[in-house]
Image: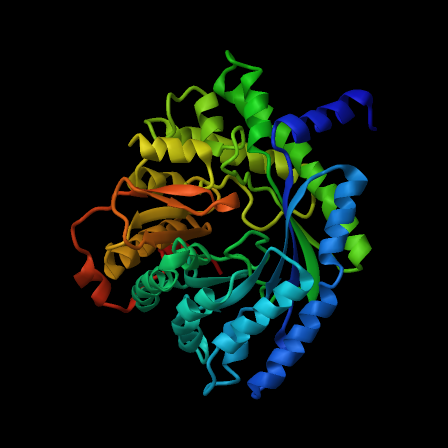
Length: 452
């Protein structure tokens, strides 16, 4: 039952602690749009996307006014485009990307994800063509996002795909060097990708999902940090309890918005993604939550333990607030998008190796990390393989969104602006992994993958 205290508390969370709904994302299946005539396929899926998502932005804005809850982004995810490209083997898949951009412009959404391929066990028809077209596609479009899944706990890691993606990431940066290398910031390489992720750049609409649905991604690092600050002398288990209760409140807001959007748009409610998604804004940082627990600076010893506590408590609190929890759900640690992470990276406390350790216990992976522009493709591939191995062995989603900053060196800054923020060029190990990457093949699935 609502009372004055709960209402005022929510108002404070929104006004003073950066609480918002980070995204409402409409997932749309394009399986019924597959056609060997690429022009016909493009026409069909443009018509379907613009028909299904015609009122998505308007609905989000109406919910904002109705409840006073900021909804930062309105997004669309679609069936992995490699599946459509498979039916048009002699055509350039970039035509699909241009159509996706046209659909995004028509619907007025911030991002459209799904220029994607799933190659965790090998390449099937359409996959290589789509992957090789990613740099051109992301350079030609502004709102289209791409992802490639190269591994899973059940299948192992496709090392041929890992080797290829190192080159693709570099090409994405090179083709958009005059735009702050934004191409690489719109590309994610996954292990154990999920089918109902509402967050970009890795969202796509899985083939096991319904024809159309609505997902909600919540935020709220500032709310969690403010809650912890009220208990400066609390024990660790008491802090965990505070985070759980706070995550419950945040998730209830996501559940409310998702249910309302589902009803207004007349499509099923998919999931609430519990992930604490930071921004460069002061007070909206996951790193500052960890520092609020008692760490002098994010990245120092104890950071991984503190992040594990945070991630677990968020999940436990969230699942009690909604029966629709899904997506990634936990805590994101994107360096360029988190003011505290930026500071820790600039002062040298936070390094890629520490971030890699942190990804073993958090929501996703090495996210929005800027490296020197001359970083070799095989080094990028090796970083992707390392992160995929963490996901494979731990049966969790991991990802890499690495941006080689063309023309910049360690210590420089790459400025994106907006939610993507700015990132310091972080050092990488200079020893080569080229021979390891050149071997190709597949890293076998771990023993615990055999569960049937």
